[in-house]
Image (cartoon, rainbow, N blue to C red; front, side):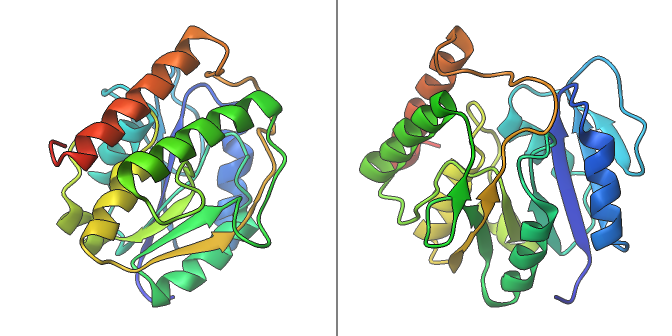
Length: 222
């Protein structure tokens, strides 16, 4: 794929981040890597590191975007859940699409996530399908590649909660941009513990934020 690539990794005290950055450096030696950290201590990694000032995982992507210079923008989790070899496949597909989503639920996709997170993902996907009419299988994916020129046209200013893919995919679908889902294997976090659980207050708040954002998007108020 021609064009400079910027890889954004939102994190919060992720112990796996240095390993992940090293893996990305080997696969994409010329890519710009931006780590946006919500935790108290900035990690020492071979990447551009910035402190997150906004709230939420979705807004971390938008904040990091201000530092990105690439024509192609990629986003993935900092805990090792998303495989770097899958990112390579996704970047190859952006030549024929405007937005490429790493999908656990299309043919060939797999997930090794824990059960309670699969439940939360199922609820959020149903929200996206019934309320917003999203025509994609993995509407909760945080693993995607998108053209910078497309992002500029979508004009996403703020995200409620974690799911940047909600407004990103919905607005892209509404504006008839080409969306492609690529099968991935979601391996689950490789180190540390999750910051959100569907059985905890944080998980309930997140599902509420997703429901609210879906309603606002559908009504054209977002």
